[in-house]
Length: 417
Image 1 (cartoon, rainbow, N blue to C red):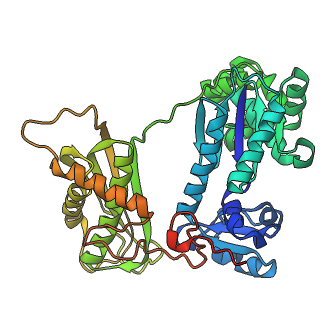
Image 2 (image 1 turned 120 degrees about the horizontal axis):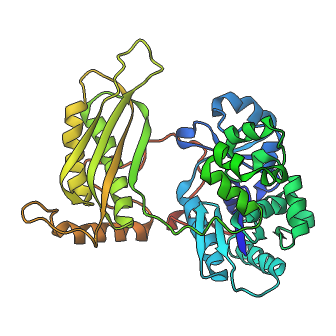
Image 3 (image 1 turned 180 degrees about the vertical axis):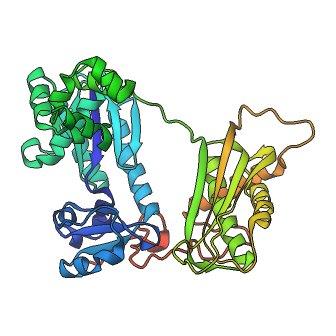
């Protein structure tokens, strides 16, 4: 048996944990630079606020319905996610973290009342973090997704935990679920299924396997078998990233080389930290810039450069040096840039790298980077950075940012008695 645990309205729930006055009110969370809506509470969804809509287009709707608007507080959301996943890991020896607010738990060999086990998970997570969750339990991962949808759709009846443990329940669930809501089907495949009259998940599992394989590839066939109750989709171990990108739209158009260099330096430092977290070294990097495509009267220029490094490294100092060399080659005077980024790729694991006889990363940088990362983790902010980086952490518009309640000791929640 598998469990799929999903945090309800996760970003909004994180805000509500530290501000209970938001309970029952419509809440939306905006993307970087407060650009567009990336998360909505159920109350906001009921108002018809679409995902991805630009914030400026919905300002009147926000005001008219007293919608509470927040800038994305990713440090807070990431920390709350780690707390939730840590509690859930106690219920199984095998956990697959699927996204920031979802994970699969392998319940094989756990001989308990699974309905009560799910309710126990719900109780511990909500008591430990304040985040409401829904749990779906079934013999396969795809059916666990279906069970989770039922638990979330019918909270009163299911109590937040629903188990598909009989053939009758499986058929009933598939007869209820629309094909476009099947995990992994997607809009294009849903259109194919509707075109042949398959509107429900039960219709999909009853299709000939030859048709599914031809029209939806082997992925669709695996999904069909999983929905039939035949375990086909296995638990996926956490894999290391094959590339790491940090890109941003600048707060204002940048013209001078020093301004652009500061942004590229910061992006490189952020990427290098992620690279060290997964214990990898980088052999190639890409630096790119973009002008403002909406200003048609200005020069349009979208340069990029790929840099093959002379040796693999994860040192911020060395990667910034190479990034600046590339930046000098693509930067133009008197051109205003609106966006830029750094992509690290072509990785090798630190424990598998064989040093070269002539060209290697400075060995002293390893201890230095460990010390810097340790201090920055301890204080949950970039207390140590390069001199060429701006003292402002990110130049993003975040006019509705909540406090970093769990990641900054200076912003910890204050309780007044």
